[in-house]
Image (tube, rainbow, N blue to C red; front, side, top):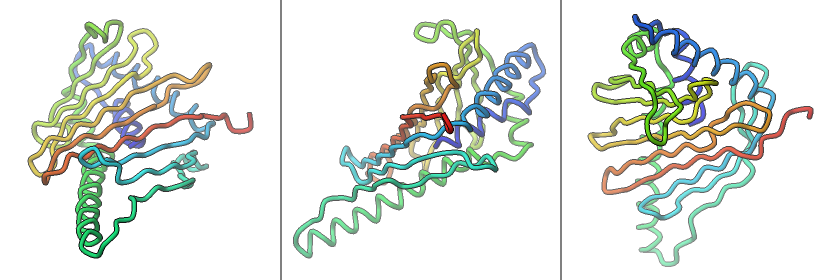
Length: 226
């Protein structure tokens, strides 16, 4: 999920909207590019929780860092499995439910991955149609960027950045999986005297009779060599 934020925002750098908005978008992109490079100096802990109909199905912790090639590397710390179910019939039912949940989880991840594999043509097409608005209400003091039909016809992406610093504060994707709605929300925070990072990404969907939520949180950032 973290890579989703990286790729979508990096796409701003190559976009050239044919309006005065282009300067704002490029400034946001440049700020994000510098910010991402600063994050390469840090390691942190990542917690991922998967719930189905409010029941925790998967809980993992991992150490995360960038390698020398700029790729994210994750080292698992622990993984919590579902509670064991007694009785052969209950075990079979639980196994069947677990298999369906795992498939839905994979389908969601495959869907999100399509938003991290833009071609240059898709990037240019999407962001050349971006609209920029001043934030209102809780988003006052921010710039709001809206793009429609990013990957699929009818999907939407919204981004909010600080109007003065260009630092990201939030982005949201509204798309679908097999005709059912999927919402992805990423919230950003600033490290003290450091870069901005995606603190929490939450994926919501209801499909195949299952309400699934995948929540990923990043915390305990430590500067390497510090």
